[in-house]
Length: 99
Picture 1: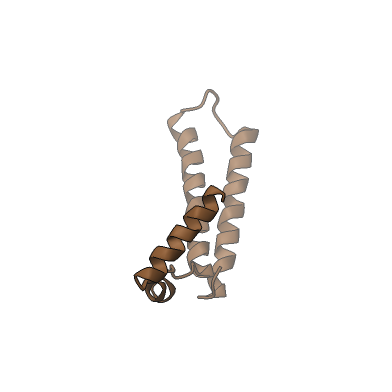
Picture 2 (picture 1 turned 30 degrees about the horizontal axis):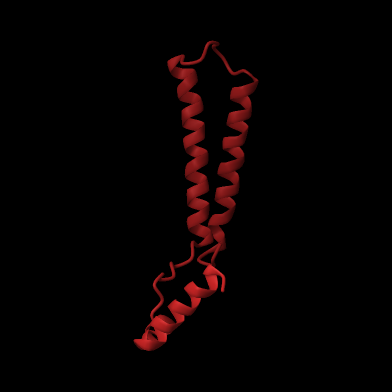
């Protein structure tokens, strides 16, 4: 008999011998989490976009990069931040439905 069959047989015996089958069936070990709503997901995505924009502008403000000004990488980061902000804001009016 393979090992997994012996383990299952032992588990089945213990559960039914001590009457744990009722407990296992009606009291799950992992409690279900409430679902993340579309409004909450929109707020998280919006906050991520704002954080990305702030960090990108802070790099330029404090001169942490080798070059000054807005090069193609900073423009791409700001465009991505703007896209995240718009997408996050578009999820806000969808309400409390699960995401």
